Amino acid sequence: MLPLPIPHHHTLFWTACCFPCNRKLWAAFQQTTVKMGTSRHDRELANVAKRSLPKITNPLERLRLQCLARGSAGIKGLGKAFRIIDDNNSRTLDFNEFLRGLRHYAVLINKEEAQELFQIFDKDGSGKIDFDEFLVTLRPPMSNARKEIVMQAFQKLDKTGDGVITIEDLRKTFNAKYHPKYLNGDWTEDQVFRAFLDNFDSPYDKDGKVTTEEFMNYYAGVSASVDTDIYFIIMMKNVWKL
Image (cartoon, rainbow, N blue to C red; front, side):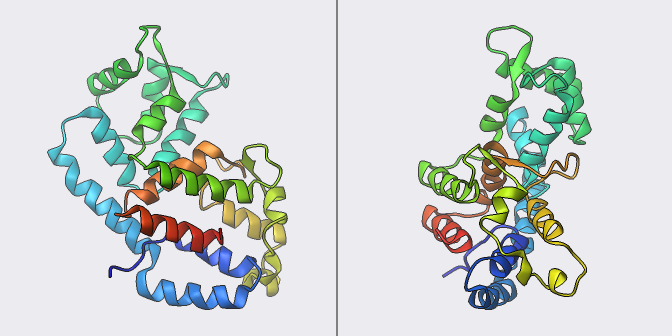
């Protein structure tokens, strides 16, 4: 049997440190890290994407692969870049904003390819696209079973039910006082929570919040490196104690 892929090792690390029965989870984290560290899976995902790129001509697939070449969080990161460009919070982009977002994220694409991509999504010819819809299409395909288990994990963390995971939500779920940096006085509880959110937050826009879409975008990237639904579901249940 192949080793079970898991999301970024920090996710299991924080889970092991912060959930009840943390000693058992910490031991499981250490064993799992030795066997299959998730950074290795992220590298494998990135390497497969990079090797596939030269063979692909479809502009949408090329963009997807460029995002996955950055690892599991690649598509989520592009979404953050679009959010930064969307100054008026309209959740739509004209072509110039779309191109700026791609370049802000250092996507290798020429203007003609970007125009072709834009036209695929500008179905009504309005000159604007809904970038949430764009990102949903860009995600690697996920089965309904995978989407459902990701939403279960999100809803467990979203204690306030407002569709956003924040430090306040984490306070109700995690016990940061078991973290070694808290124990030795290096970090405050807020810093421990912030470090957890950094697993999902973009380096371009660290707002300390994770939306449903960002969470789903992240796990769509993780999902791309997991072959079967059953492995993915077991992984999510183990990591989030569902």
